[in-house]
Length: 168
Image 1 (cartoon, rainbow, N blue to C red):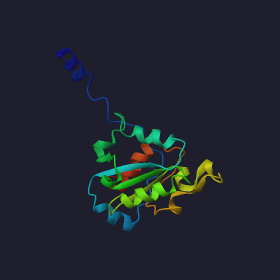
Image 2: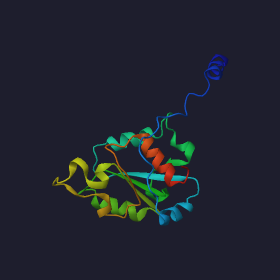
Image 3: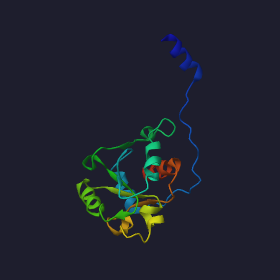
């Protein structure tokens, strides 16, 4: 045990740096800034997949690993929309997920923030025109922030969420 502790002390901190995002910070409107003041310095998010290819989900999962460690910035993931402050929606809205998205939106307590993550959530991306797609997220529920990319890199997602929290 002492050997492991000694090795850890010699090695120092191995986490904490992640590749910088090349994306400019998103514009946060004044009403959204006012809404975000209620959440103070933390944000609990619930991820909703409405028909994506799972690329955005993989990048969202990377936010919690030891490299990005989103929890150190006050960003946590909730298991239920009832405990969430924000919904992060990925993928175009499909016919089968249309009512589920609206139910999750209703179950999330007010005030809430909706983030459309990825090109598919913003404009249907590569699924545009598909028979099973009913449209982008903003067609079904109000969207406060959009993060472009196919899929957006974890550093871009993290920078956008930190900007939303007023940490950038």
